[in-house]
Length: 361
Image (cartoon, rainbow, N blue to C red; front, side):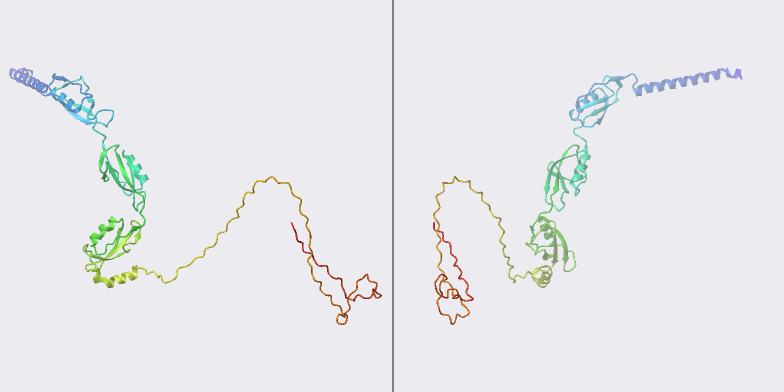
């Protein structure tokens, strides 16, 4: 067996096989060196703080590729300024190597406007702030939705929820201030249903019941009756009921009279007006401030007051025998013989007349 192993034919084949193997390995490494450009390195130029357009041109001139990645917007740097690069400047890389560039974007990343329409303003403001937006002017507009967001404005133009705008942008909001009061109801009789809807919307009312005479829903039917009546005053957002037909209002007078009896209240003004009597108000007494005491002059002697008695006729005193006694009365101090017996039994002393005081100054 050893003799056959050292046969020249076997040795020749072995040598050929080794040569082929070595040749293949050499060719493989040469191909790899050529494909990977082994030993051919290029220094990376410094493009930090340059504009991305200038950085790209510099890398292309030295045979290097590039990849641009936007960083978070930083207002301290210029828009499209290169903030960082990888590999760093001065490194040696092979030709065609891609250099990673971190670039400051032109502005903040866009965010979507949240859907806060018809939401309470307090909660809506919080939601707007959470997504990175700012609330600018608050404009109040009459609406039945008091303190609710009616619409949003960006740079003076109305925007819908979901619209992308730069982060930290300022948007204005329109908030409802409550319904308007005492708005005159428009006259839509004679208009089509479609035209009446537009007039009612412009007048800040809403369309309520729309009853078609033939049961259809044709928007070209003519309005022949409305409730409330034209000229009445209502608050904003109140509904207006409409009756429509293909006939003219003159042809539907009987129907109009029936609706008037149902929806138009007649006020009886034949009764006299109620009169109200005014009750005088009770006035509180007004007390005047007493004047300052004056210096009294020396008193003059008072004049002598004299009393002048008023003459009063004495009334006669009737006695028991006044009918037969006609003799005059004698004074008590007379020397008559019957002085002790001349007084009547029932006689009483005459009353002294009262004197009236008369002051003579």
